[in-house]
Image (cartoon, rainbow over all chains, first blue to last red; front, side, top):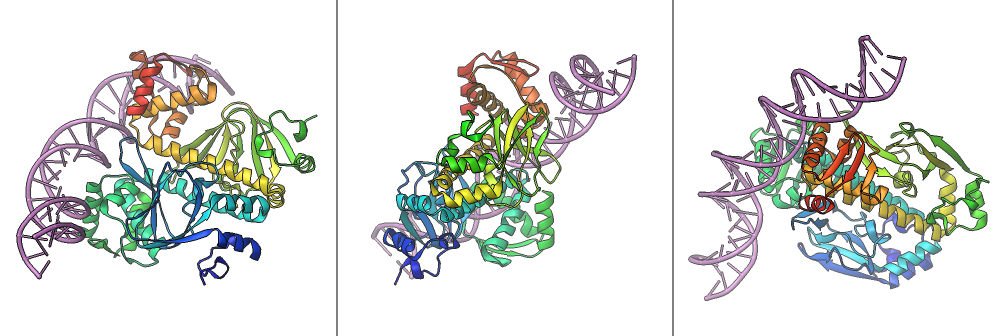
Length: 225
Length: 225
DNA sequence: CGCGGCTTTGATGTTCATCAAGTAAAGTGG
DNA sequence: CCACTTTACTTGATGAACATCAAAGCCGCG
């Protein structure tokens, strides 16, 4: 019933696989449920499996020398959270933690490698995804660092509205501290600027509940910040 | 005489190709010489060719909204400068410029794609390289942003000494302004801190000539900054 | 010789992190 | 379900790090 062949969450990444190859994946995969806050894999551990997010939301983070966490990316299903370094590195580069209750699959990494080696079109698709993800992370990082604090908050709010929720009203899946780790600022300043946006009637903010009121102005702050 | 089959600069990237496949590359490649300062490809242009640096040194940069350049990476031969976005994107994401006189090859991108589709082991090797390069760029970017200005200068000097020249004495291939673009600070502060390092007898600095004098202390500044 | 870009140093101002202290919210055990 | 503890959130005051501005010296090049 839960076979990869019939999985409605299956991504286009696997489109180039034959029925037989899909069955290989199916018989080498395991499905897991994790609750909010649970860790899926830990940076530094040896990679044995390819991690594929089916439902939910996770964060990829690394820990700096000073022990402070930095969130590299917030990933949704089909973002192939484990993909990034699976093919270059022996160890996970990032710790992956569920932001909401999530479901994911693990596929033996050697099985993935063998399929890629055997099926060049499949490998080429993985290539495309990896390039795309890396590219987005790099772009995001540079975007963040080129903006002032108000611009960063504006950007991240619009990003959540546009990419994650497709609505101007949403429930933030991150704490203020996590927001700070994602856009490289202190929790105090995240709060300060959110309050400022609320005072200026740009955004309705109550706890994690967010509503974008003046989208035009917010976009201006993002773009000029 | 200049065939890929005999090329002594050929990277391990092509190891998985058969003689016949190498010949396909050979007959679809073109070799170019560029002088210092010349541009190899421009961000935004359509990707038609895979760019492979044979000899020299180049910078990858993008231009921010404000028109200021940011250097994403300084690449040597075998760094596959064009690799990063070739497989995900229609357009070059970065402008590539020679920092010293350089030699590079262009290979038709469709030929590369076809070879990857046909030869899974080759595709898998490309995958490894892409992952590795992205990973390094991301790591470098985070490293830079987590350090104060003195730490950044120390880091970049040690990086040049270790990775690029394998010597504590070398000629900087970048201007002060370019250095600033690479490590996200202003040219004034690059100069200020270089002068400071010279005053403290950490580094001999005269124009582009650099000599690391107190490596231990410089490493400490890098790691603690 | 003189012009323009690169380099250097100093003075000033802004942005942001840090510190401190208090309030709300969310678990936790009885 | 309520007191208790802990964690998250919020605001203000202070200081440090860094960008910006200004001005002068240097070097290569026409």
